[in-house]
Structure formats: C-alpha cells, structure tokens
Image 1 (tube, rainbow, N blue to C red):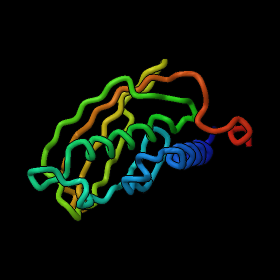
Image 2 (cartoon, rainbow, N blue to C red; image 1 turned 90 degrees about the vertical axis):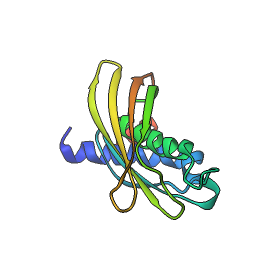
Image 3 (cartoon, helix red, strand yellow; image 1 turned 180 degrees about the horizontal axis):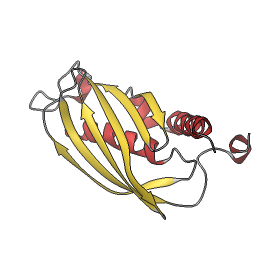
Image 4 (cartoon, rainbow, N blue to C red; image 1 turned 180 degrees about the vertical axis):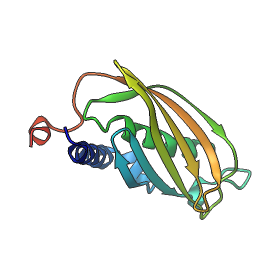
Amino acid sequence: MTDLNATELASQCAQAMLARDRASLALGMQLLSVAPGRARLSMPVRADMIQGHGTCHGGYIFTLADSAFAVACNTYNQVTIGLGCSIDYIAPALMGDTLNASCVEQSRGGRTGNYDVRVENQNGQLIALFHGKSYKVQGTVLAQETADE
C-alpha cells in the first residue's frame, strides 16, 4: 500500500467512525486531520461543560483525548478498542476555549499499541497529556465492499 493509499484509508476510517460516534458529535468535536496512527480533533468549551470551579470539567477534556485516541488507533481499518488509559491535567480550560487533541502512535505490534495525546487550547497552551493503550479485536472499521474499492 502506498502512502497515499494509507492516508486515504485512514481518512475513510476516521470519517466512518466519527459518523457513528454520537457522543463526540454531540460535544461539537470536529476532525482536523488524520493519517495512519494519527488524529487531531477539536472541541469548543461550552457553558454546559463548566464545573463548580468555573473551568471545563475534566471529563470533557478526557472525552476529547479519548476520541482522538480512538480515531488514531482505528486508522488501519482494524477494529481497535481501548485497553487502558490515563490523563494528567496540566492547566484549566475555560469557557470559550477551543481545545485541540493531537494523538500520535508511539508503538503498534501484535494486538496492542501505545498512543499519546496532547490537549492544547487555541493558543497552544498545554491543557492535558493522555496516554492510551489499544487492543486489536476482530473486524474492520469500514464495510468490506468499501475496503475493497
């Protein structure tokens, strides 16, 4: 498979996954870029995401990072799920911020992979660091007839 074909496959997988991901779509997430083992998503911080201390609830930041992780580890058209993950919160996100989660594959072999996600605000300020471990299961992301085209 050429790089162009791998990139196109990654794009098709990302589009298919996000089209079915009601949770990410409901939070206003958008796909900014995708490549094999990589994904970048954005999410606006809305008023209904603010917790009692006046900053974005960590669960929403985690969800954005987890969605970028999910897209990145499924870019090879092999159904891959999260085996475990952790997050470190570095700085608060505020209402009106746009958060960007950039996921990069660190390793992939056999059935597992390791991925790191940086969550930054619109000014490039680091908000959180996320690490996810993936596990490949049976099945493909795309319908077989789409994958064969």
